[in-house]
Amino acid sequence: MTDFPQLRLRRLRRTEALRGLIRENRVDIGNLIYPLFIVEGSGIKQEIVSMPGIFHFSVDQLPREIEEIAKLGIPGVILFGIPEHKDEIASSAYHPQGVIQQAIRAIKQSVPELLVATDVCLCEYMSHGHCGIVVNGDVDNDQTLPLLARTALSHAEVGADIVAPSDMMDGRVEVIRRALDEKGLQNIPILSYAAKYASAFYGPFREAAESTPQFGDRRSYQMDPPNLREALREIEQDIAEGADIIMVKPALAYLDVIQQVRGRFNYPLAAYNVSGEYSMVKAAAQQGWLDEKPAVLEILTAIKRAGADIIITYHAKEVSQWLQAP
Ligand code: PBG
Image (cartoon, rainbow, N blue to C red):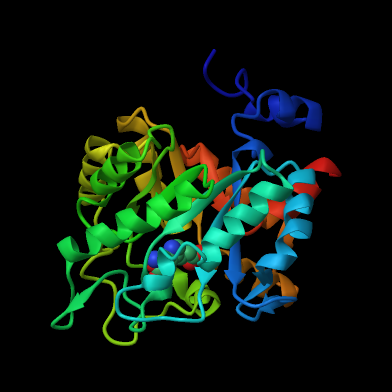
């Protein structure tokens, strides 16, 4: 009974209703997080050249955007800040009136129930563009930790629902957890960019966030792309330090990592469908080389199939429109 002609796998592909009935994975808006780039100033809504359809917003322009996002059914956003003032201690990252701190307050005033996650990293705030304190040309792990804790705390204190460290310093989850707990913020979860690779696919983001390192690269802290076992150790470590949600980043070239992590750890798993993955599809679609909607849905479904629960994606708004009116 297991061979052709008795066995015909095409029987269950005959109609859309049959295909839908046995469909194993679906993209659900409820699992998507939409990234937002916030700049200082006012009256700014400016498209990012390397990321068509994605904008820089000043804080005063946020309420309208946030209402639209909420109306589309997207449950949360993740915030990236581009400060005017950069220095060697990232002081704008944890300033009470910093661009992200203001953005959190503005979002919470306009749509309080929308989840606000914040990217906790220092690169956008450093004059040299690295993710930590630089000593003798190298990013010093331990000197960076207190600044990360201070930054995460400053976000949670003004209303962030989730803090998401993306710097790849060892020990950051632990110091952030401790800092939050000491201030009575023990209910704020940490989404850790646990396995974050030194990837070429961050290119468009670095233009958007003005966070390109002024010298060297990030290979001494972000992971080496060929490594899988090391990713599992990173995840193990972040869980031991207190991470509530773990993340693999980027997503597309790392579906095997997502799948392995899913199989080994019973933690909510996020995947970051990064800027380069987004802009490649956009560029090909603009040329007429790809049909954007099915291509995007195929990519996001693949990330789910690999095992991600949560997907951070720049496509979130479009996907939500597509799924509401197919
Ligand atoms: C900050 C950070 C980066 C991204 C997210 N957080 C850039 C980097 O590590 O260079 C990349 C996101 C994307 O490409 O969409 N460190």
